[in-house]
Length: 423
Image (cartoon, rainbow, N blue to C red; front, top):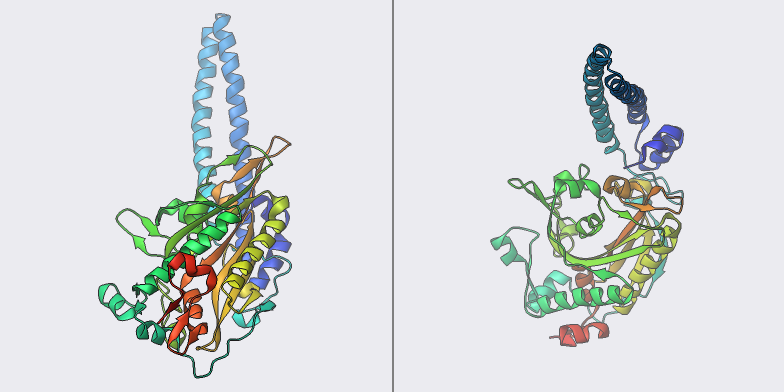
């Protein structure tokens, strides 16, 4: 959520910046501005009454002390009327504040100056390419055929037990999945990230705080009876660890990681582009989250990007990094880098990670602050990234490492999975 002071003082910049997202903010900014003016006016009246009540309280005490009982009773009657007026004003102020917050939730984050205007993934900028396309002596098989050939993943069993998009990983397929999770967690630990094992369901307040609600309400699985949401990403529980927290000083750099299953309804996802592991309703992911002083945000972003590049390099995967255009970025992000790996058998690029910088957008919802040297509370900055999402990583590993009669396993995974090849 944007800060109200930003809207008060920089309306034109906000409206212009959100054009990169193709978001017309004129009406909603005007609505918020009018409500904010009214809120400040009513708040001023309420504070004036509170000051009068404080003065009257002192006067009443003085009257009783001086034996002026009748005058004291007159002042008490005035106090009663003022208190009723104060309660009425408080109800009005609270109501306006709620209206402002509801409107603020509808405004996405303002794109960073590096982000270009665009409509879709076609307008994203490729800023780095790494590695060479794998070479094969015969036509490579797509991962869903390899999974069936070597009994690694059972998509049909998943449909039977749950539905489409909920596969079973079998035998070496399951062990390879677990090996990847452990490898990613170990690498995050070496990079200084503190590991958490978090809940897989969150309450409405948590989903709202990190921006999943109201933006992605239709994509989240909802447990209606308890009003809990299945997490779409580990970012949600990890970042909410610091909801309503004031970090006691400016000397901090908080790095969190965790493995979770992720649940996304992905309504309307059908066809060959989402076949196999390309798009699932339940998938595994290791997430990294940073909570930073505003002065350290750029450095943290660069470190996160380098961390993910190192993971992909160690897995010997061809990859590229894209900076997303305004129209393709997530609602809460100000700047996002996507990582894609090349799928040899499908002859296309598959997204496996997003690293996003939010500035104070999330922390304003989270009420996540730090105590500055000036003794005032300031909003932290937050970042998060997938390090990594497993389904398409596994798809690329299977497809790109297939040889005649076997699939070779990258060396860095040997100790984690207990085998060097699948045959």
